[in-house]
Length: 444
Image (cartoon, rainbow, N blue to C red; front, side):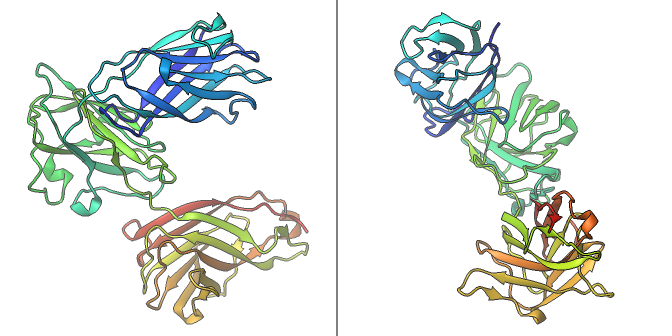
């Protein structure tokens, strides 16, 4: 039996980067008994220090109760010590904060091993699974500059809503020209939740006149010999091969498509670029256009006991990322198929919008809103000059037809809340977007 699926992933290879993130993944083949444990050691770069951030399995099962994880910087190792129940075979991941060395250094090797006892000692005994070595990471001087170009700078194709296909523009300035004599590797690494297409060559654009509506004068043309000949995506990483001609002190830009954005902004919202072995410092990404902490709840969870639909209020709580402007801004709410919004024959409906910014909460006057049900969705248009503002908690209360008693065991289903600058309610006017878990129905 042997360790497998061992990996060492790092946010940054830049020298003296002090808030690096290090992820160590591994699969244990054999149950580790109480008193034993896992030792992950490296002969890597002098000056690398780390502290434990979290220890998780790749599924829903964390390390068992009683298992302790800690670091030993004096011996450049991480130790996971089994508790009374041991550590089951399975796939695990450790996440650590690391401080990179202060000068360039080679990669080194990481060793993954398990033992039956004495894991806290300098020389543990009685090895269990066959250990395995994996390459680490070197550290190097960073590029002069790297960034994601904001959409308002003229970069084309941006759609920042959750799970949407997107086109992201990056710019970078090298410290030194790549070594001549063949293609160079261009790496793009994004936060968790992004996904590049498996075969992404058709999603890359380097012609500055096509990357920007109006090319910035500070940016140089992509080198004529720097043709992109290969692009493969794997989750939030893309690996490209480019030709030659890149020079130091020149700012280059390119656009690459992603298959989808994350559902929400990642906690570690940083990107990196690397060309010819020269890494960038991590730089911030964009915030996903979604509502913050959206929740939906009825006045009661019970389904109607009668033989006819019963109308009850349902409340949606949310905070916006983008201001919904007034007049003209629209909130759009969709519910599960077994629930219907109450409306008149002409589609008009009743809804209440309130904000918790003051005590008592401020409630929009009915004549400040226009409520309409169209194609099963409720649309609420702002008629006055009062916008829905950021950071404030808002409540949208709508009237919903709950199903007949025989349908009252329906699954929770999903609700979707969207906001728009104005009508028509299309991609050009779309703002925030969020999907919320609904509530199950049971008989009263």
